[in-house]
Image 1 (tube, rainbow, N blue to C red):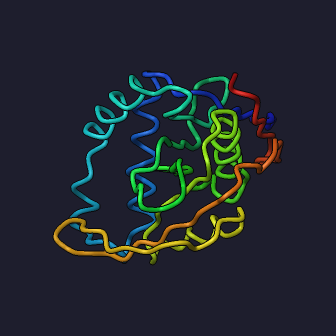
Image 2 (spheres, rainbow, N blue to C red; image 1 turned 90 degrees about the vertical axis):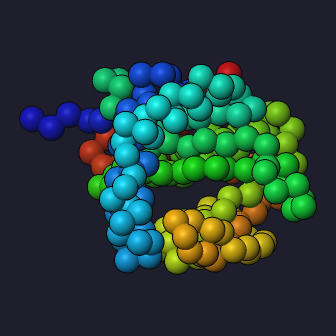
Length: 194
């Protein structure tokens, strides 16, 4: 008998690092196949990413969060990391650095709930606007448009010996509101992260 899967958004814990690393590497290999060099994608290491995410989680806080979409058994379905914007030339104080949903679980509201949680946290912290960068050839970039992001900038990004065009989506307001959305056979709750 199939049971509902309840997925909630919470701050990442050190034990989540391996699950985050798996999603990060698998998402890059899935999303960027045919866009980025195969050799670079194959060199990506889940153990190296686990170590990197363990460090990132240890430094995370409400102004520089790493959040996960997880079920009661600590299975990770997506994650987001964010903080102060790294590009101070643009009029956005906050930035989403990474946002990935596990392959096979996209288009079910997980990414939207992760974004909504960041927007709510950063709204409470009085950040003035938010930006996210994506490779221009990334087919998932249209998700940011669907979430109300406006195309606000572009740049060239060096990676693995080549240069790729990146585009930025910006939000001047951080009011996406609280959401509860259906996810597959279950539900996704987006509780306050006070």
